[in-house]
Amino acid sequence: AVRVKGHNFFTEEGPEEHALFEHNLAVAAVPHPLLLGDDSTPAGFWLPGFTGIHRNNLAVGCARGWKLNVQAGAGARQSNLEFFNNSAHACGFGWRLFPPHQPPTPIEFGTFTAFRCGTCMFYYSSGNINHRDHRFLECARAIHLNHYMNGLHAAPFFTDLVLVGNTNDAEPFARAGLAVHSPKDNEYWLVSGVHVSNYWDTPVLHGCKQTACTMRYERTTWVNSSHRTLLKPSPLTGIFHDMDGTLTGFPNGWVTYDEEFNHFDDGVCTWDDPRFPEGMVCGFADGSVRMRRLYVHGQEPWQLDNKLLEVVSDAGNDTVVFDTKKLYGWAVPAIANRTYDMRVADPNDFQQLSWQYGTHPYVFDAHGYLCVPEEAAALNETCHWTQLNRTRVQPVIERLTLHLNYSDWRSGFDGTAGEALQYDPDMDNHTFGSWAHKKWEFQCDLYANLSNASLEECSGRYWDEHSLFLKFELDQQPDLGQVGGRLTSVISEKEAPRSMTQSFTARECPASGCWRPRAPGADEGGWQRWSDPEVWACAKLTEGATIRECRPRQARSAGGRRRRLMGEESEAA
Image (cartoon, rainbow, N blue to C red):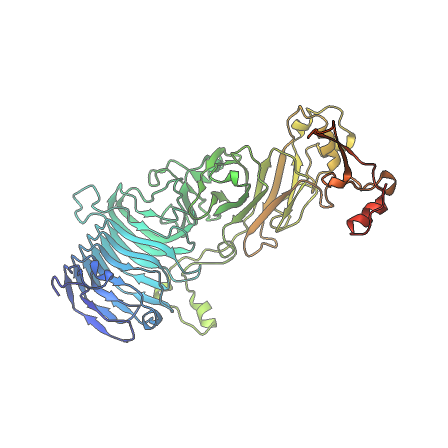
């Protein structure tokens, strides 16, 4: 098919099964102005769903080499597409799927080659596909996937991927752009096997730009490609997990954007590796290090929105930008078994705040596409050869201590996980989310004549709540600044909720409630409702004057007042 108007090779709504497209050539499909809008960007091969058999086909110079535009009904239900040894040359998109769709059951794509396309392979949102032996050469972008639909234990989205930035080894520059743009807001991305050649100083890997999520890679090789990742703190960049050491040099290596609060002096991170510009590499040779996204969100009041989050550790301090697109909060790359101190850079203090540590499967599940024959045999299964010699990441104990600082009065906090403590929270001994808080002793020291009880509460030790008596004594010296404090909480494996989340709400008063004045007794004349006209006796100042003088009538008895409010005849005072 050469210069055919509209889509070239296609079926209709998708009820067909095993329709074979083999050894076909689609060249320069021409937009058709009179057909459907979809024909304005015609495809060499158009699919209504994951259906049919496509083998040994070639699309050249088309707006879309292959275009999957899922059709409701039969097309959406199909899951039997066989895709093997197809090619797209000089197309706008080699493969394009939109709107979001994934096959109902997992399928596998065989060899696919895209050469000098705008985007070799584009998915708006998909999953349940293992792309095997794909070769993308000199494309402006090799892979772009907006959203990933699968979980932690799904097959890799790409296996044995080949990326070539320039087919001419003599030219020391890439003819390709950024290679892999992995999902911007979904966890669990996995690529098993990628060979990168001749990208030189053009970045290759990027993703999770709006959520700082985690992207997993194993079995990577690099030839004439010096810049392996694109890393920026704004917009956000995700966390790359090097499962087997082929990306960073050690197993369970981690790459993310550089933050000074992770510049620990024990050598866990380096931040001057030229392979990762503007980034940092963290890990130890024994593979024991874990890095997770600490997602801080649910902030109230609204004045905290879009403000920087100040983060401090023993290593240093830095700020984290607020994301307004997906998280509507802050993403802190946190190294397990460390301590971080945080405060929103705003005069307002948080009344509500939540944090989430990684995801439960990442922290507690072994994961990776490795199949052990003995384990498979025990389940009466066999290992596919592609699952041998892969990596399995085993869970380790991950704990964290978090400090949340505030500058105004709080009697206590309510939390959704763990328990309130009257002593220092300890990540090694206490349950997930347990907390306590304390007042700053150096700020209390500015106050004179505090009672012994108040001095004890201000001694710098942790409490589950502070008394209103302390607040009363502090309020007697309003010329001094408010006494702030620190809320400390821990992350541990003990009783960790599935959500891996803790949410705090500040309380102005103890759990027993705030102080209220007592109700007046009968001997005090009962209640007076001063907005009630009958309470007042008014008289003109002079004859004919419009200005009146009003004085309260004599107070009614409590009983008479009560009867009048119930609609009965009132009793004169």
